[in-house]
Image (cartoon, rainbow, N blue to C red):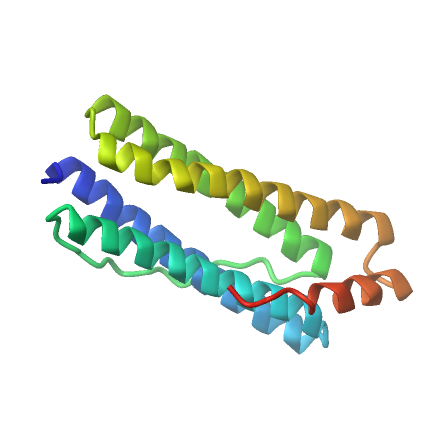
Length: 164
Protein backbone atom coordinates (compact mmCIF):
# COMPACT_ATOMS: atom_id res chain seq x y z
CA UNK A 1 0.00 0.00 0.00
CA UNK A 2 1.23 3.46 -0.85
CA UNK A 3 1.24 6.30 1.68
CA UNK A 4 -1.21 9.17 1.29
CA UNK A 5 1.65 11.65 0.95
CA UNK A 6 3.29 9.62 -1.82
CA UNK A 7 -0.07 9.12 -3.51
CA UNK A 8 -0.63 12.89 -3.49
CA UNK A 9 2.87 13.56 -4.79
CA UNK A 10 2.45 11.05 -7.61
CA UNK A 11 -0.90 12.58 -8.54
CA UNK A 12 0.79 15.99 -8.74
CA UNK A 13 3.54 14.53 -10.94
CA UNK A 14 0.96 12.92 -13.22
CA UNK A 15 -0.56 16.37 -13.69
CA UNK A 16 2.87 17.84 -14.40
CA UNK A 17 3.55 15.17 -17.03
CA UNK A 18 0.21 15.98 -18.65
CA UNK A 19 1.08 19.68 -18.57
CA UNK A 20 4.35 18.86 -20.35
CA UNK A 21 2.43 16.98 -23.03
CA UNK A 22 0.13 19.97 -23.55
CA UNK A 23 3.05 22.42 -23.61
CA UNK A 24 4.88 20.41 -26.27
CA UNK A 25 1.71 20.04 -28.32
CA UNK A 26 1.23 23.83 -28.22
CA UNK A 27 4.86 24.40 -29.20
CA UNK A 28 4.49 21.84 -32.00
CA UNK A 29 1.51 23.72 -33.41
CA UNK A 30 3.50 26.95 -33.19
CA UNK A 31 6.36 25.43 -35.17
CA UNK A 32 3.94 23.99 -37.71
CA UNK A 33 2.49 27.47 -38.15
CA UNK A 34 5.97 28.72 -39.03
CA UNK A 35 6.42 25.88 -41.58
CA UNK A 36 9.00 24.12 -39.42
CA UNK A 37 7.41 20.71 -39.81
CA UNK A 38 10.46 18.80 -38.57
CA UNK A 39 10.62 20.69 -35.28
CA UNK A 40 6.82 20.38 -35.03
CA UNK A 41 7.11 16.61 -35.52
CA UNK A 42 9.83 16.30 -32.86
CA UNK A 43 7.72 18.22 -30.35
CA UNK A 44 4.61 16.21 -31.16
CA UNK A 45 6.50 12.97 -30.54
CA UNK A 46 7.78 14.47 -27.29
CA UNK A 47 4.21 15.32 -26.32
CA UNK A 48 3.32 11.66 -26.77
CA UNK A 49 6.26 10.60 -24.62
CA UNK A 50 5.12 12.89 -21.82
CA UNK A 51 1.64 11.36 -21.99
CA UNK A 52 3.22 7.91 -21.77
CA UNK A 53 5.20 9.05 -18.70
CA UNK A 54 1.95 10.11 -17.02
CA UNK A 55 0.25 6.80 -17.85
CA UNK A 56 3.23 4.87 -16.48
CA UNK A 57 2.83 6.72 -13.17
CA UNK A 58 -0.92 6.09 -13.19
CA UNK A 59 -0.32 2.36 -13.63
CA UNK A 60 2.24 2.34 -10.83
CA UNK A 61 -0.06 4.27 -8.50
CA UNK A 62 -2.95 1.88 -9.16
CA UNK A 63 -0.72 -1.21 -8.82
CA UNK A 64 0.24 0.05 -5.34
CA UNK A 65 -3.40 0.39 -4.29
CA UNK A 66 -3.38 4.16 -4.62
CA UNK A 67 -6.17 6.36 -5.87
CA UNK A 68 -5.84 8.40 -9.03
CA UNK A 69 -6.95 11.96 -8.39
CA UNK A 70 -6.73 13.85 -11.64
CA UNK A 71 -6.05 17.53 -11.34
CA UNK A 72 -6.84 20.41 -13.63
CA UNK A 73 -4.04 20.77 -16.14
CA UNK A 74 -3.35 24.47 -16.62
CA UNK A 75 -3.17 25.96 -20.09
CA UNK A 76 0.50 26.05 -21.11
CA UNK A 77 2.14 29.43 -20.92
CA UNK A 78 4.46 29.07 -23.88
CA UNK A 79 6.70 31.89 -25.05
CA UNK A 80 5.97 31.61 -28.75
CA UNK A 81 9.05 33.16 -30.33
CA UNK A 82 11.52 31.81 -32.84
CA UNK A 83 12.70 28.20 -32.95
CA UNK A 84 15.72 28.91 -30.73
CA UNK A 85 13.46 30.45 -28.07
CA UNK A 86 11.07 27.51 -28.34
CA UNK A 87 13.80 25.00 -27.58
CA UNK A 88 15.38 27.16 -24.89
CA UNK A 89 11.95 27.07 -23.27
CA UNK A 90 11.83 23.28 -23.67
CA UNK A 91 15.25 22.99 -22.01
CA UNK A 92 14.21 25.21 -19.09
CA UNK A 93 11.01 23.18 -18.72
CA UNK A 94 12.93 19.89 -18.69
CA UNK A 95 15.30 21.26 -16.05
CA UNK A 96 12.27 22.13 -13.94
CA UNK A 97 10.91 18.62 -14.46
CA UNK A 98 14.22 17.19 -13.30
CA UNK A 99 14.02 19.17 -10.06
CA UNK A 100 10.47 17.90 -9.45
CA UNK A 101 11.41 14.27 -10.17
CA UNK A 102 14.43 14.58 -7.88
CA UNK A 103 12.23 15.94 -5.07
CA UNK A 104 9.79 13.07 -5.58
CA UNK A 105 12.68 10.59 -5.47
CA UNK A 106 13.91 12.19 -2.23
CA UNK A 107 10.42 11.85 -0.75
CA UNK A 108 10.30 8.17 -1.66
CA UNK A 109 13.70 7.66 -0.07
CA UNK A 110 12.71 9.56 3.08
CA UNK A 111 9.55 7.46 3.41
CA UNK A 112 11.54 4.28 2.76
CA UNK A 113 9.12 3.58 -0.08
CA UNK A 114 11.46 1.34 -2.01
CA UNK A 115 8.98 0.46 -4.75
CA UNK A 116 8.41 4.14 -5.53
CA UNK A 117 12.14 4.82 -5.34
CA UNK A 118 12.87 2.08 -7.86
CA UNK A 119 10.14 3.28 -10.21
CA UNK A 120 11.27 6.88 -9.90
CA UNK A 121 14.84 5.86 -10.71
CA UNK A 122 13.64 5.33 -14.29
CA UNK A 123 12.35 8.92 -14.35
CA UNK A 124 15.65 10.24 -12.93
CA UNK A 125 17.53 8.48 -15.74
CA UNK A 126 14.99 9.63 -18.32
CA UNK A 127 15.50 13.24 -17.27
CA UNK A 128 19.25 12.95 -17.79
CA UNK A 129 18.53 11.81 -21.35
CA UNK A 130 15.87 14.47 -21.93
CA UNK A 131 18.10 17.32 -20.79
CA UNK A 132 21.08 16.07 -22.80
CA UNK A 133 19.01 15.73 -25.98
CA UNK A 134 17.36 19.13 -25.73
CA UNK A 135 20.62 20.79 -24.70
CA UNK A 136 22.24 19.43 -27.87
CA UNK A 137 19.34 20.74 -29.98
CA UNK A 138 19.71 24.19 -28.38
CA UNK A 139 23.47 24.14 -29.04
CA UNK A 140 22.89 23.24 -32.70
CA UNK A 141 20.24 25.93 -33.09
CA UNK A 142 22.47 28.57 -31.53
CA UNK A 143 25.30 27.52 -33.83
CA UNK A 144 23.28 27.87 -37.04
CA UNK A 145 20.99 30.74 -35.99
CA UNK A 146 17.35 30.91 -36.89
CA UNK A 147 17.77 31.96 -40.50
CA UNK A 148 19.48 30.45 -43.50
CA UNK A 149 20.05 26.93 -44.73
CA UNK A 150 21.32 25.55 -41.43
CA UNK A 151 18.01 25.83 -39.62
CA UNK A 152 16.17 24.17 -42.51
CA UNK A 153 18.70 21.32 -42.43
CA UNK A 154 18.07 20.89 -38.69
CA UNK A 155 14.32 21.04 -39.32
CA UNK A 156 14.67 18.21 -41.82
CA UNK A 157 16.78 16.20 -39.37
CA UNK A 158 14.27 16.72 -36.54
CA UNK A 159 11.48 15.40 -38.74
CA UNK A 160 13.16 12.00 -38.81
CA UNK A 161 12.57 11.32 -35.14
CA UNK A 162 10.68 8.07 -34.64
CA UNK A 163 7.41 7.84 -32.82
CA UNK A 164 7.43 7.23 -29.07
